[in-house]
Amino acid sequence: MYGASRIDSFRWTAAFYAALWSAAFFWMLRLLGCRLPDAIIFTGLANVSAAAVFWTPVPEFFVLGALTLLAPLGAVLADHAAPGLAVRTTLASAVSLSVTFTNWLAGIAAAFLVTTRVRAFQWSVNAFVIVSVLWIAQAAWFPHAEFLLGNARAIDYLERLPEPVFTEALMVFFLHSMIMPAVAPIGPTEGLSIQSVSTAWPWSLLWLLWLSLLLAGSRQLFLGPAPSSFRVLLSCVVAGQLFLHLLIGRETFLFSMHSMPLLVLVAACATLGRARIVALALATILTGGAALNNWQQFQGAAQHVATAAATVVKDDAVFTDSVDCLSQMPP
Image 1 (cartoon, rainbow, N blue to C red):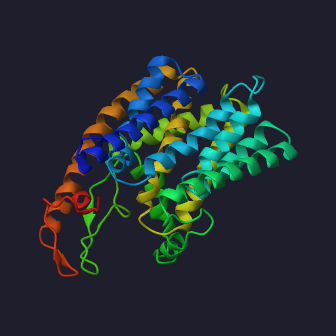
Image 2: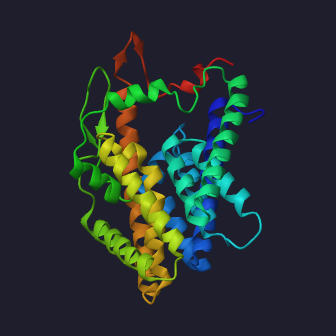
């Protein structure tokens, strides 16, 4: 931002990304058929989830990645008889490819759900071409940017991940993404202070509230008025994200920002049936409890990082809690 420091510029950028994602999520709920108060409550629930509290302040593309998964779902929910279906679906597919390659599967699936196979294939190719052309323009400004199909660093990162533990991955996917348990220090490892939530259990009451809401929403998703194409796509995307969590190793909370909004969408389907009032009551209580718990856990994790950063010496450099890493960047 012009005239602001680097750290303030990042803060404004992170706030903008979070606001954009929140607006898109609210729009998704309205497209799904949720009433205005329901959409407000569940948007609030998504924003106080553990994934949102911990990852929206981070200078990474977790929030944008979550945003790209909403585009194909919105394309499926939109009126297929309205003009511009090909453009909407192609752009949604391109958006799903723009940040993370695996998210493109949602864009491809959306195309096949709304049109014929031949057209869906063509729209997917068009989306790939759009993103490739934009990457060429990006490479002119950022020469070190790797092409989306040739990211060797991502492959190297995946190869170095520890073996997955399925019970831990399931716990992180369904529970920790909403309710953050106590963050446990497990380091130091190779001079780094490490924290983990993989083996922890969340608060029992909030855990039961969240699972009850999720189960009620799952039932209504399959038995309620949601379009069959949306039902199939949301189920496939959730299953795909779960498969990735089971595949990529431990500490999958790193990727929870992609999966958590999908689970909240499932839970929000509970408001589309007769149990709407009960679902809203559960969501309201859960929002308050999750906000308090997740903020406390975030503060505790941040304090641990600040304490560890003040004492850790690595590569002949001493880090303190007052270091502004962005100020060390070249102009």
